[in-house]
Image 1 (tube, rainbow, N blue to C red):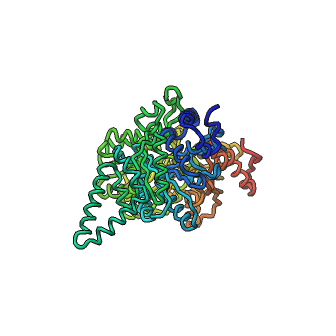
Image 2: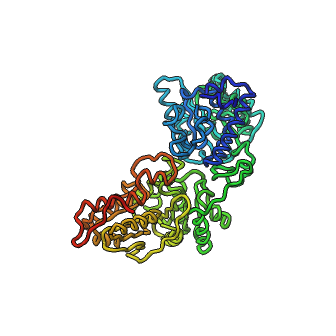
Image 3: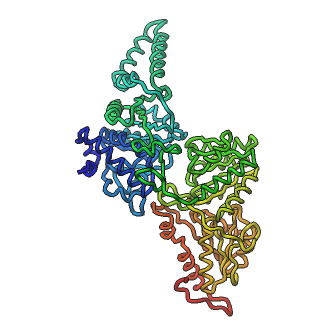
Length: 636
């Protein structure tokens, strides 16, 4: 019987023999590889934390002791040993397990985080709460895979360091994405001494007695302390943490479960905040992942389990951006590129290969990236900051006050905008167009297809006195949708029949809008479909078109509150246009993970649902004199 089949919760791990624990680790890796090969997900990070996770759950008592993962994509092993192994095959499937911790799934999950560098702040608050309430509970924060490059993590460390009685253990999962320390046998030996409560007591006694000696005591203590600190810093990379007042354990081989248990046990007994530094290898135990140069199978597409070869896939929006930004760089020596630890995912790896001196990876630090971009612009360059749409949320203040206020020519390229699907609520890029509407001077473009992406990107980098944004969705782009005419700066995609309905199609929703138009025309409804291209500011041509149509419908893959449709509605009201407006967008709610098509179906952003809604609205009004609409039970 597989050992994993006997694990119903973390406490079952404590009864296993060494041989059983070794077998369990092998079974977990096998299941991770087989599941992610078909379901996709984060493989490399989880292969690297198998022994580390087993050790944590053998030392700490979850769910009484709280374990918080940063980032949350490192939690697959945690899911497997907290009673979810049987359902692991549903990972990232609609109605199945989330790719991140989920409160709805298990009492062992508390923080559903997938935006990095947040766990230490959660853990700081949790530990303080337990201290205030007088509860004897530990909090464990697992931070790694680059999360320590985020400034928020260091803000939290600054506070954690002064909470001397906080029962908080910080596990730094160092897989080469944060920093690479030295490892030494003597450093390991010193760990037991440093985390022994008697060690602190002895230091206090020595300090008091030496300082009591007139004339020389204080100087003698300072010299002794400097010698001790210098010796320790030469042996292990703990100086930074201990300068903050944090105890440091390690470095420890994160793939040596017994060593990890010993280190975690020492940290647990200390009674104050402790850093446990684990050295791991991303993709550990699966040769194709370990040999994968780009990111050790961080988040591969479907692949062959035996060879690791990823299955062929077509070009996606990101690939087309990657090619065109290099072309821009060829003709514009002032264009530079910025990424926040996402060089390959956002497609800047090709720009980096061609222009290494003009490419900057700032780590998981979107706030810093935005303001650094402002500085680059002030220095006479034009930065292109490529980032997932969901992560730009973190840098809103910097976009507003550091870039826009100073009229800096910075272009933000938002990948994975709109509904992304599989990664769940935190990754849907459904907030950017609402947030950015309030930024004075900012111009926002939403291309409907690849040719428009190229031309809008070209236009964006020409703007030198304001921030520009170009957003596009996840996945393969649609077939090119050519315009049949122009209205101001807008492209007219459909002009058929009377001016019954004006459909304003935002970006990737243009394909749906054209389909909607075909269904309406088949029912005797005249339709005009326009793509604004630049959705902020509102093109005056849209106001003129709305004035001459019977109703206006907007379709966007952004939240309906404060989005493009809402701003157009406000603009029409201010212009005295009384044409009825109906908004179609994403409801303001956190969307459960599923495939993008399934989510669009669920929220009513499909051609059939939108066309039927329009027809029902029209049927409630008297038809224009001399015309009759077809039956509106449903569009063909």
